[in-house]
Length: 92
Image (cartoon, rainbow, N blue to C red; front, side):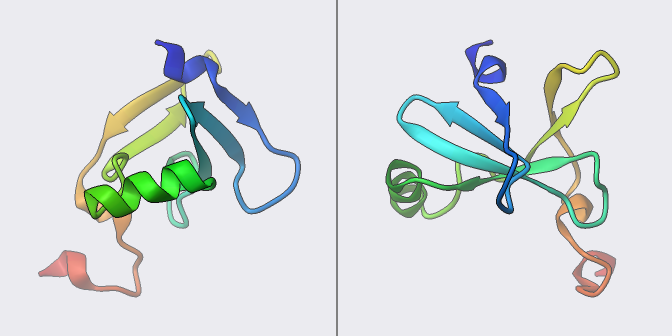
């Protein structure tokens, strides 16, 4: 899939990787609890406008990770991955 070929490592900044998809640029950041998973955040105007139009990120609840061979893959994980231990919301 074209998506996987557009992910490039960042040397500086808070995003570990940058994903380019069409005109949108998304930063991939490590999850605070599970460091092998990454989530997407908008980093250019086109991506911010897309989030504003939808009312949420189109990549919400999607997580990226590197396989043993070093390739990127997508997963849908339970909402507990989105929570931090200090939230306690996942216990309800």
